[in-house]
Image (cartoon, rainbow, N blue to C red):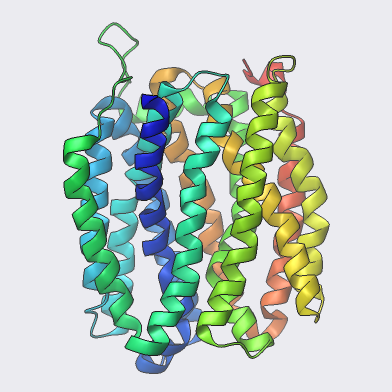
Length: 396
């Protein structure tokens, strides 16, 4: 029972993690108006967070492997919640940018530690489903951040959303101090985690890990264009309100992703009994199917077709989330799992940040739809890489 209770408790933390980072994207129009910011500057709000978050992720993952995963999670939650509250007090665009960068440092502590804790608590029989269910909390955070942030921005001003979220996160961190336990922490007899630089060298010596790094980095092109610019895309292209655009830009993708988690997580756990490549094949095939639909979302002027394309892509994203950490468990030693996930986060954030920034810089030239089409090509290349992952790549 405890492994599933753990997933439930961390589900809420994961929701807050993505809610706090996502809410700003639904508030771009009022923020742009108040600070007279350019489209490139708006893109930089995403990129600054992503790059700091990405470069801090390996250190956050290594700390979770080396020290206490429980305290890494609790400290991260308290810190990013306080920074979320402070974001609503920004008096200039520079202060807003600095707050986003600081949030990147604090949030980098969470996912590697949480997913390593869940992976240790669950066996191969339930690992993909458990991981996927936790990741659904991230989807919930994106939806609530998209719709709720836009709604609060319209009715109470953009700063109110950050105040409410910051206080909620600090309160939940106080509750978890008494409830969260790491019952499957590595024993003293297990292989120790090496210092940071030798750990990184060991990871990149593994062929399977190098493949996963490229796969995650290419997928991030699409993920962060969608997270950063899709609310604005619906607001401008279809004349929707901030709340309506935030809802449409998040709900359909994330609801489909939840379906992908259930289907992809269950199927991968079942298929693993007869095929060690199941956790690679499931998301690989899903992204091959989804790439043309994502391209369609950026090419059509029909709102229904945009949503249809995003739904198919969302299902593939669910398969991705359900299987990434279980794939890490297949190619990386147990004492380096959180570190490995942190490094993968870094790759995704660096490439995703570049794409978010370029989408803003070239928005007037190719539009957000053009950025979605470019992202679709990246997703297809990522799928091809993953489908080539074999036993020779340290796949166990």
